[in-house]
Length: 229
Image 1 (cartoon, rainbow, N blue to C red):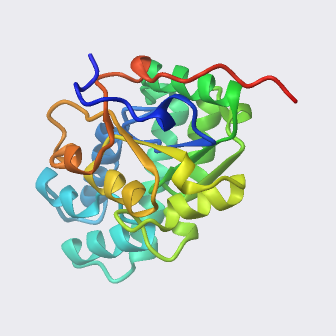
Image 2 (cartoon, one colour):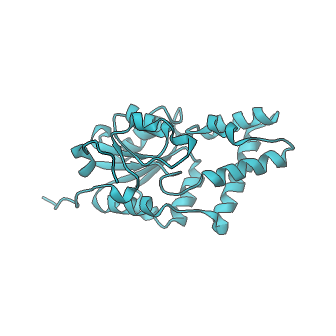
Image 3 (tube, rainbow, N blue to C red):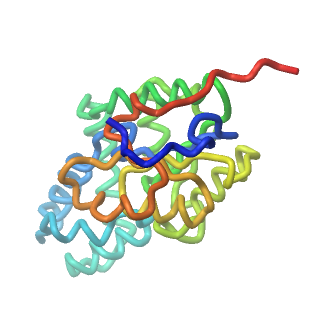
């Protein structure tokens, strides 16, 4: 059931929709955790789940530097490569876990207007996930936080996604699950639709930055595509 607050009109008829990926289109947090645990073991170190909290919303250079510091490793780029390689291998071996309501909502949004994905994942990971979820053709643009000056909670990735789509942020939706992402969408001037993940530390506090709170993207109301002319 959706939150009791009234839905703003823009939620029904946005100019465009920008989706987060991890936690919205696929349940990838356990796979990221597995990759980080595997890399820690490979370099003879260790990491805890609590250590991951500092990485939410960050770009590759930020989280790889953080991991390298935790590991006492001299080369963040090597840590990034090992982590991304492990993650991609797990995805391609069938470990990816789609969130059906998110995938369906993206397809509904794409049927009526421009859609982008704005994610903290590296660009190669985003492209791989979109192909594996069979939604690459529905997504007009996708932007990684690696392609902009700063990751979430700063608005850069959402502003760039809107720029590439040619849409006005204030007339568009940001679909998020996390605190960092909700803050980024709000800072970009977008209407933030939040679908928090139950029990996920990354979602804690996100409600304060959301305009719409849903328990499932099956509840996302979108008007049919307008007739031409």
